[in-house]
Image (cartoon, rainbow, N blue to C red):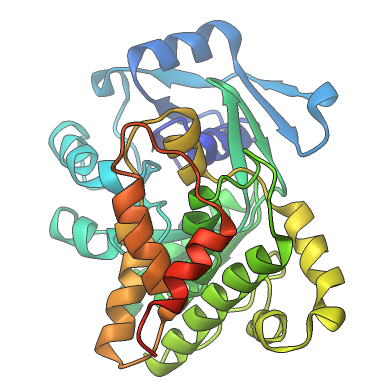
Length: 339
């Protein structure tokens, strides 16, 4: 199998590095400066807390799709806000009819990619990864990816691609990709709030309020999914719905220890890197948190925590001089939401 990975960010870089260690016919496409760096210095990967043991991986990096032969599968690993234009470039410049795999958080890709390509799969990323600098990427665990199509006809492609990926990184084929994507989005709800208050960027003022907002945001997310008829998709790297409910509903004395352990595992999210570090002004708030707010409206579910955080993110992230809010300021906005 020949594969092209479009985007050498945290997820595309990890996937490109892992696959290149096992398969020779893998190409990694990105902007000229990024591709040049990868060709000259290779791709450096390390597991969390193992910076001293970074592993250098030789990759086939290109900045012109004409340099890539006809491939069997294309992984598009860019953010939701870049997906539509990048997908059009792939459609115009990649020859043949490869299987196209969308590697984005959320379900926006499920509306964009089927309009452009005949053979489409969707990947859910069930691990955290981050970029230290271009070509140097850390990760918490080596996978897993969950892979599937929106209909049964795609399962043959999902199985074939998952088997091939599985030689390098754990990959789980499924016929429940919508459930898997939405369940992962519950975890992604934390990205908006933690970015809003500058978690990992400044000291948290009020940990009790931080826990309250974070836990209730995820608990609301689970309630919304249940109302929408979504079934829990369990993956060992993600907290269960029961644990999410317990963190929000049980007394703090019973849950603080578990919450702290989960907190210790959290890294600076890609949204925080966009807003706080790179100051791009672009985020996936609308495609992730906004999707849940719209689902809450559709299924008549009260969601004061997520609704307040969504409105604050829309307002604050648009500011060129965004400064993280305090937990008390966010909680005050929650209290102003109608029941």
